[in-house]
Structure formats: structure tokens, C-alpha cells
Image (tube, rainbow, N blue to C red; front, side, top):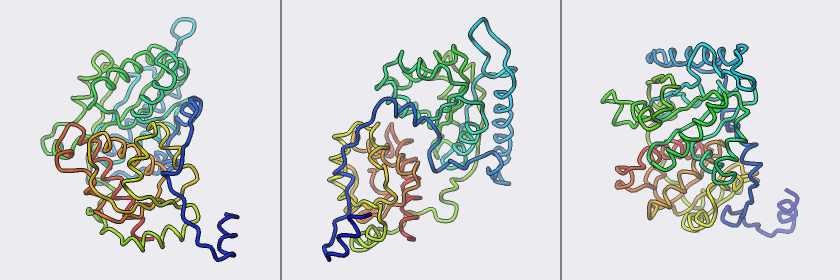
Length: 350
């Protein structure tokens, strides 16, 4: 702030900071410490969840998750000398399955807030990053004393990661850790009545018997009022809006994509430390699958922090090619588009 003021007084035009100039370092201890609900859902509670009156499954899901929290808070019967039963009189896991934007994350974070501590909360991707930093045994030890672990956005599109996380959760259940997970059903499967729970319970195999699956129906709340992505901003408008935010950054899209390739995705959260808004100029469809998957992680970290996005170039919902949206990672891409569109709409109105 002081340097910005000095530059204004001296008449020198200061260039806004760029994410592509940052080289954050993240210690493994930070990855463990950050296993808490994202800032966007810091205030989420059962009492603030508003079920859609046209979707009775949302009320049923709220009641089921609240009951699960109450079981966790009950004094657990002992198992042997050291182990405890994580959720007496019920299965130790609960799984929320539904489309994008139906409130699953709100319910999951509400559960975390209501549950006895210590409790952990992270996305599927964050768990894989933690195993990469601590090793499998180290991650089991780091999380094995939790009363509850919440896993948002359980992913089934990478068999290796699915087996890895399933094995991790199995070890944690053996230590008495209760589990809660969510996953997204693709929009084209909703009409078929086929939900991701079938895939989830099949892929986690032996672990599946420990989960109660809860279906959550409804439209994407992020787009109830406006389903379309906002029109791209002109570059001079992006510059004006970035200049109006002392803690905003602005990056040329190709330069930022190249920078993301130089960082491990576990560092993308730290890349946004202290940032309050993000400008992106010259958006174009991403060139390949690896780049697209890195963009998904970045969008998740932007969304976690509720950072408005000011974007020029192509519409934000056109950054993934039709081939990508029809491929094996389309669930990730569709979630990212839903989130990025919401952030761009917020940026377009500022």
C-alpha cells in the first residue's frame, strides 16, 4: 500500500502485480494446516442451508447430514484399548451425490463445523497433493487422529488417484476416522436417473460398505438467475477495474498458463495469497489436456477464495474445447466452467 501511494504521489504509473511473477513455496505443514473449509464457506451452517422447496431431496439430505453430525458428537463406544467407533449406530461414512451447484459443499462444510474436532476438510485433489508431499504413510499418520475427514469433489476419472485415495480412506477408517464425501453427477446423466453414486461405490470397492449414499437433486444455484457467461470485457475495462482494487492482479492468459506449468498445483493456493481480485487478458481456449487440468485447479482455488475475475478475450465458458468437454475429464471441466462463470459474473458487475 505504501509503495502504491508513493507512486501516485510521484506521478509514476505503477504496473499492477502479476501472478506469473510469483514463486510461492509451500511447506508440507501448511498443506495439513489448510485442511479446513475454504473462505467462501466459512459461514456455512446447517441453519443457513436453504433447501429448494421444489426439491424434497435437499431437505432429506439436510436431515441426514445433520443426523450424521449428531452421531459423531455422541460419546463413542470404545473398540479395544486405542480405537474409537467414529459414528456409533451407523455407518462411518456419508456420501452426497448430485449435480453441480445443489448445495453439497454447503452441507459438507456445515458438517465440518458441527462435528467434534479435530476434523479435516479438503478436496480430492488436495488429498493427492498431501500424499505427494508427505508420502502415503506420513499422510495416514497426519490424518489418523481426526474424528472426521470431509472430502469434497471425489473424482473417479483417474484410476490411479482413485485407488490411492480409496486406500488412504480405508486406512483412516481403520483408525476410527469418520468420512464424508461429495461428488458431481454430470448433467446428461441427471436426466437418465443415473447418479455418480453408482460409480463411486463401485470404484471404492471394499470401502463402499462404510458409506450411506444420499442423493441431492436440483438446478445449479450459481446460475438460477443468469445461466450464460458474461460478455468478455474490453482490455481497457479490465485495466480500469484492476487499478481500482489495491490487491488485484492482472495477467496475460498465455503467460499465466506457461507459469502454471512451472508450479506444482499444490502451490496454486499460495499463488493467490493476499489477492482480492484477478484480471485475465486475452483468454483463448486452452491448447491441451495438461494445461486444462492445471486451469481446473486454479479455478477451484479462485472460487474457494471468492475472487472476482475480470476477463477479456473469449467468453470464460469457451476456454475448454468441445473435445475436452466430451472427454474423460468433462466432469472437472464442467465444474470449473460453472465456478469461473460465477466469478466472471461478479467481476463484470463491479
